[in-house]
Structures are given as structure tokens and as C-alpha cells.
Image (cartoon, rainbow, N blue to C red; front, side, top):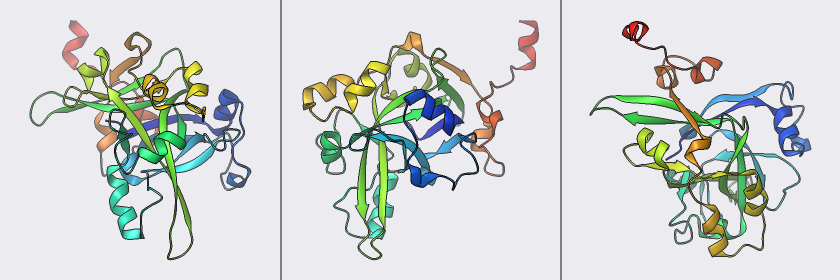
Length: 249
């Protein structure tokens, strides 16, 4: 699954990459468009992330990770459901009540520079890895989104979920427990994904595993899950130091 992501680039770089401006209401609330978005985003903190939606495809928005369906009745239910909607399985998205409306009418792309996954090596040993596309510093994940109106205060929550698919051969070795990976879109597929005329078969065709030869992965340090430290730093995506013995191998 995909619960940790990186957008280790600036807001300005995202605008240049996608040839779209950020929503005008977002700035100047940020210090500068030259600020880095985030080196590490933990889905379970439900952070805001850049998205480009079907309905407003000419701008980049900031939506919260963890989809809240429009039919949710109150804030308590919203808080409970978003924990389970960080990801949406591509194989069942058309059937699940939380996702079936969004997959048809509310698809989005989520710009990232990489994502994180853990490789299981024994019952209590999991090695964190950073996965990225070496030839495409900024790339897009396939997502779905929703807008929920809180009836208590009339606030509108804009949220999204990342679609996942069966892992390719590279990701099977890394995510060797559940063998899943986020649906990565090629540049050509980005436009297709936002096309409102797509039918179910065409949508399913896009949600497939990305070519593993275009991806790169490496082990990183335990900084990413150090609860006493700040993982949102450039060091979080640095390759882990090799064991001392490797110097002589």
C-alpha cells in the first residue's frame, strides 16, 4: 500500500512541470512558492498535498490525504472513515461505497517525487525504502477525490485517496508482504486519467503496474519512523549508510 509519500520539490517547480498555477487562494499563505512542499508526508497525519482534479484541471489544489465520501453524516464518522481511505484498491474501487462515485466522476492526479515502502526481513525487522523515477523527478500518482460538507459548521473538506494495484517485480521484492504499489501514471496517461468521458474498462486499463525498469529503489535510514525526531528533512530520503563490512566486500 502507499501511506508515505515525498514531494521534495518546490511549489514553483510543480507549476512549471504541469504548466498550471496553484489555486490563487493558497498564496501568500505560504512563505514562498520556492519553499519545498515536503520531504516526508505521513498519510496517517492526513496532510494537505497537491492535486489536479477532473473538475478544476487548470489549477493545482491542496487536498487532505484520506478521502471522506460525500455521504458521510457527521464529523465523527468522517474521522473514522478517513483512516481507511488513504488508499483505494484499483480492483475493487468500482464496488466499494467509499470510492465508487469518485472513481467514475472525481479522479485526480497527485504529483510526487517519490514514495516510501518497507521490506519485511524477519518477524520484527522492516527496512524502509525510498522509491522514485530516476528519469522523471516529478511524477503523478492516480487518485480519486471527494468533497464533504460538515453539517455542523458548513465547512467543506476536500480529500483524496491514492489508488493502488498489484506490485511489479521491483515492488514485489520491496513490499514483500502485501505486494502492492501506487498506480503511477505516465505523462500520456495524466491527460487520459482526467478525461471525464472514460468508461469503466478504460479507467481500469490505466490502473496498472508501472514498468519496473523505469523505477529505482534504495534503503534509507530509520529516521522516517523516529517518533522523537523530525522526519520531514532532506536526510529522510538519503540512502542508508552501508554496513562497515561492505567497505571491504
